[in-house]
Image (cartoon, rainbow, N blue to C red; front, side, top):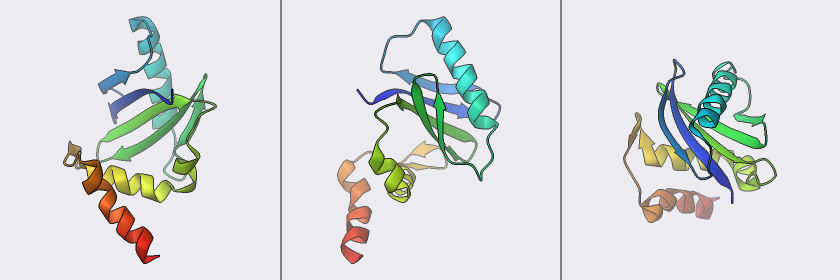
Length: 120
């Protein structure tokens, strides 16, 4: 399994959406979210968007006033994301605009990227 959880957090550190793909008790979730949010919000824009925490790799990105945090297995972080970070950002920007989900179709999201790949 790759993705363990997805969090959407505002600039004040308040969790606005949390989706877990493994069982954690409510106390474990609160503790994990607090630790991760403090760690990610304290980082500067010049630092990379990958953080190791416990047995997770956290990949995060700020859009407007929300931080999108994705926790993946520490040993299964997708190399495609690391080596093609600009494509991952582009896909997310196609899906989310001003904090609103505007596109969910995989075909529509990938079409501009495929055009860019063909052109290069």
